[in-house]
Image 1 (cartoon, rainbow, N blue to C red):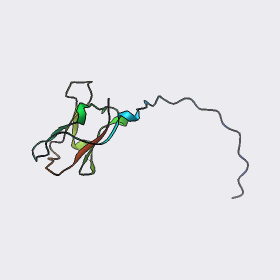
Image 2: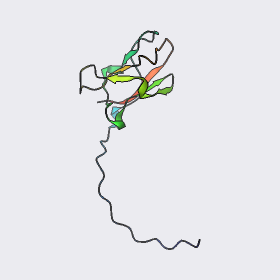
Image 3: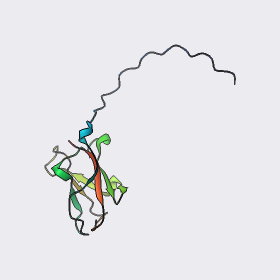
Image 4: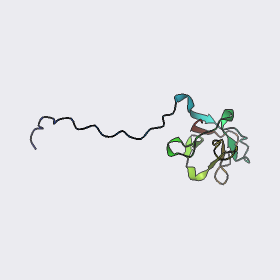
Amino acid sequence: TGRQGPAGPQGATGPAGPSGGVVGEDKLRFGEELVGALDGVNTVFTLPRSEVAHHASPGHRIRLYFNGLRVPESRWSASESGGAGTGFDTVDVAGYLVPRSGDCLYVDYVQL
């Protein structure tokens, strides 16, 4: 191969992309400990400070961690205790985890 030639002219500007739905930093929550008894029996937990979260759209999903490891969404469920459209505030880990005293269960999420 030979040397690279001079650069060509600038191409036309492309069309505008879709709106990104930017989230303010004040709505981002990282490493928030869930509220609920870690007693080897309880499997239902709530978000701290009575907050509710986005969970329906791919870019704004709740992420659950157990003792530092991310838990796949197929292993837990999120629900809206106030009814459909009120925001997700409850996490249920039944059938997969039974957190005990000393375990750490926390989430990352975008507050509504």
